[in-house]
Amino acid sequence: MKKLLMMAPVTLILAGCDNSSTPAAFTPEMASFSSEFDFDPLRGPVKDFSQTLMDAQGKVSKYVTGKMSEEGCFDLLEFHDLENNTGASLVLDANYYLDAISQKKLLRLQGKCQLAALPASGVTWDTDDNGFVISARGEDMRITYRYDSDGYPLGKTTEAKDEHLSVVATPSKDKRKKMDYTAISTLNDRRIGNVRQSCDYDRHDNPVNCELQIVDESVKPPVTRNYTIKNNIEYY
Image (cartoon, rainbow, N blue to C red; front, side):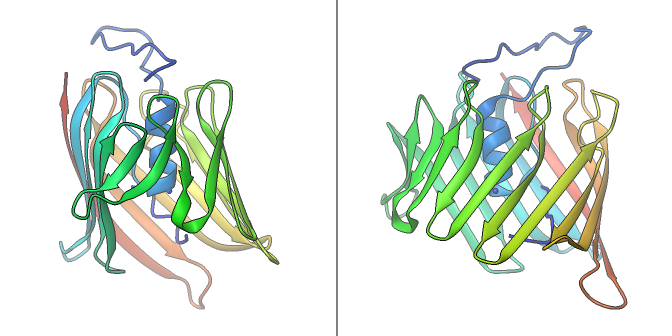
């Protein structure tokens, strides 16, 4: 649940064995959706999950729930940002994600279940040869996404008119602890914040409990906020 101060498995075989010497890679759908909808990506044969972000007083600030098919598609994705009173619940239906309540078509898909377009906003997504979303384009806006060799999201750069916002994430060198990361945010090449996260992990190398620190450096003196993330994950 990488709240980076601003504002979002068809081609990879999951290494799901507990005694595997190499941790499972992040699939294109999991990596891309986590970047676009602001949650921590998960590895392996995930069936359903929830991620809950709580502030230092234990109050829920944000939560995400998802249900996935055995092929790795998001059958359901629900996310709520309580601090900003925003959220949505998406249900997979053929080549679209529908609003779970109104049944309105919100997102058009490409391939089996990858993001293609948000028609109402004129936003379209492009993918690379491996199926990862690498860019999003809209009126007067362009976002580029970066990943490492395991499919872990390394951040994104947003360009809109005369503003250039960049988030650069650096994960732990331990491949089994990718959610232990730091991230730096810059606006027009001026540093505006940083994030640090550390987690406990399950046998699939997914985070169970995490401590997240967000520092807003755009104000003087900088403001530090501490959060706890609770993850519940079920596997196939």
